[in-house]
Image (cartoon, rainbow, N blue to C red; front, side):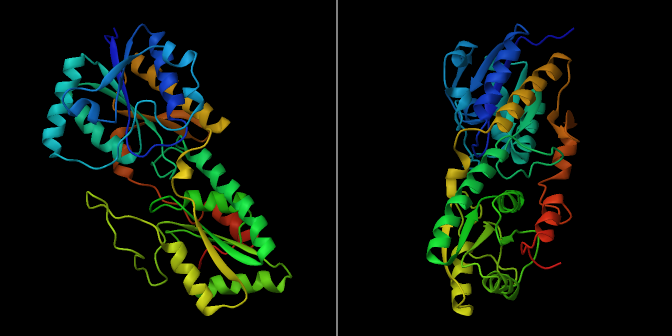
Length: 358
């Protein structure tokens, strides 16, 4: 017999499009199970800080509201790093769970959030199901994470716009995109945006290779080119472009676009380059129909599995089908980078995009 009466839901880590559709799906599906839903504010902070920060969610929060169609997180989401020891945070999390009387928690997050919050939930003796979300698409085992498709569309739209001004000014324009240390966003966007060069952290490149491709474009009679580079790409010799860190000591990616622009301009006169760093625009924008649908499906599946008594799992897609994965397997797999033998990399090479050295 299922004893669930109250569940919590939180969004953790960087935000992305589709989070609100997940929240709506979880609230509606849980309400139809007869459960109460508590929305936890600002990730785990809503349970570890004092006083607790939360709100009771019902279908009315979303039925007459634009929220499910919007980016960002209705509940707020923090990824500023820990301010206390893991032991202290786990204790406070458990106390918060007990104070609210939660029987289960739905965590919408990436692989890092799955790892951290699953530990908190086990220590608190509360059920947990994870829903994968990230524009980086580096959460393991699932084919797609909520938010990735919308970010790809934002990058592709940017390439469409850049193509027009590149053609007008006879330039090779560089678009630096997010992705951390994974090249999924860069590669998918480059293929969809018909770029000439795409550099990702997983595949080594050479300046000579980039210049050779630009010269090939020039010799073809075309007077413009597009270059996509993932923020996690290092120099040709494998060094980080910047040693900058954030307030909690984590490395800050970025700067590779300007680095490459200066290098190309110094060594090749066929094209003048300029850089666009798309930044947090990639996290926003109206969620695509794919991301909305994925969010709803995974949110509903999370509630179905909890109703069956399952716990310590992450819902996701495998072979185009909705499935679930044991959280310990998700944590064991770790962050998943772009596979050099993926269909997108193969297609990019087949149509002539320079994606690095084989």
